[in-house]
Structures are given as structure tokens and as C-alpha cells.
Image (cartoon, rainbow, N blue to C red; front, side, top):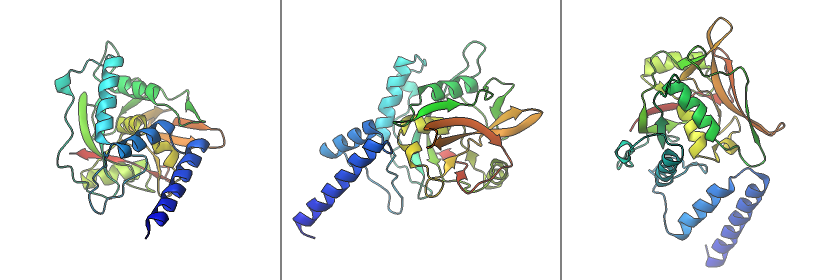
Length: 263
């Protein structure tokens, strides 16, 4: 391929990026940061066989953002509480990535889980052209929201291996049963953390190559029992990023129950 051919290809890619920023399918801030990284020669090394998602934000950027939020939001973590980037992270699947997850401690009468759930949702910015919507009934106090059996909320800041495609097409109930057999932890507030740090993730959701996420590591009390789980969805017609809850036995090929693992 000649230099001219390569330049034509780069120009076409540039024009596609500009088009997608313009229609809101790519986050402009994330694109600017990625382009600046290219200019400065900060290329991300990818393990062979691993698919690098276009929405992914480098561990360095994640670390910078968490430190900034810790100071601005007065979370109370010290410098030593924030772990350095794992040096030898090896993804176990083609879609597993590093995520710096924050788990806030209890504050007053507000539990750590409730505080984290509400804080992360508040900080999330909807993709360009969309607004945020949270189901009014989706309360986060201990009477309505809890960790799923076998899961717990441990305060701190930790790097986790986050896979957004785990248990694809399985209902949250099926995913929980399978996770017990597979010794896998289902993601809960980590999904909100991912959406906070990976601002283009929601724009990639298509129910196919990029499924919508159920927060199956959590359970929501509705009517008479803990039969619902929270989920995130992007409504293009209503131009909304939605946080709501669904019956745990409901399964769809468009959804997955993301998982988290130790690094």
C-alpha cells in the first residue's frame, strides 16, 4: 500500500470520526483525548486475541479521573488507598478490560452500597443529545437495594477485570445461578463505574456486538420480594439513558450480565 493510499484511508477514518461525533454516537471529549494520545505517541498495547473496544479509556486516564473525583467529591480516600495500575494484566476473554472501581464507605445512616449507587449515577453524563432518566421507584436504601447472594459491598478503590459480555442472552436469574457454578462475580455498581469512566460505552450498545447491561450483582425489592435487578438502557427514540429495573427471570438476547474478576 502506497503512502497516498494510507493517507486516503486515514482521511476516510477521520471523516467517519467527525460524523459520529456530530451525530452523538461518539463522545467528543473521549475522541479529543484519544487523538491527543496518538499525537503524543501514547499507544495502548493490546494482548493478542483481545478486541480493543472503541469506547475503552486507558488505565492512565481512569486513574487520573478517579483521583480528580476523589478530591472534588470529598470521598475521603488517601493517596495510598488508590492502587497503581496492574503491571501484568492478562485478559481472560476477548472482551475483558481493566476498570478502576470505586466502592464508597458508609456515611451517616447511608450505607456504602446506597451511597455508591446514587453517587455514580449522579456523576454519569448522558451521551451527547441524550438525557438521563431514573425510574422513580428505583430506590437505593437497604429496604429496596442489596447485593445479590454471594456478593458483597466492600469499601475501597480496586482494579477489576471487567467483561461487559458475560452471560449474554441469559436472564439475571440464570446468570446468578451460572455464576455460582462458574465461581464468577457479577457486576453491580461496577457497571455504573464503567459508564462513568467510559463515556462512549453507552453509544456502542446495539443489543448485538455490544449488549445492554443488567446489574445482576444487585437485587431490587419490588412488591413482595427481591425479584428485580437494575439495568441500563439507551432509548434512541426518547433520547434517554435509562436506569431502571427488570424482573430477574426476564431474558433477552440483547442483554448481558457483565462480570468482574480479580486482577
